[in-house]
Length: 146
Image (cartoon, rainbow, N blue to C red; front, side, top):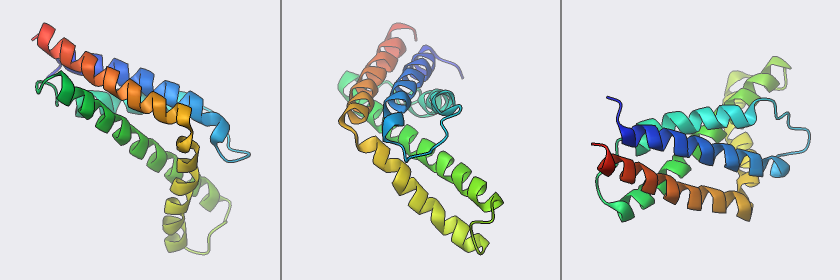
């Protein structure tokens, strides 16, 4: 059921995801095609904000700020996993793997490679502070418009 908390969480975490994606681009491996990276990441932020943070409000501002950081971490997991699977499929279509098991195992290596781009202080600050603000806004909206 749509609520104000879910709407605010979806919008806030779309912005957080877009900003974090934009800040992580310089740290991506050389030759990585960006394409719709920011937009897809923001769409994942909308979904995770709505489904995760939106339903967790109601426990107080401090708790919601912590849950906002959890939501940011969830966004990071799904974005890195999704783009690693995409990269694995792209490489497998170029016949870079000997078999399907090697391709599946390579997803974890690709995730680690993409995850290194998130080690930048600016990206971590965006995810941490943005998650706290997003959690606060979702809690505020949940209390204000019940």
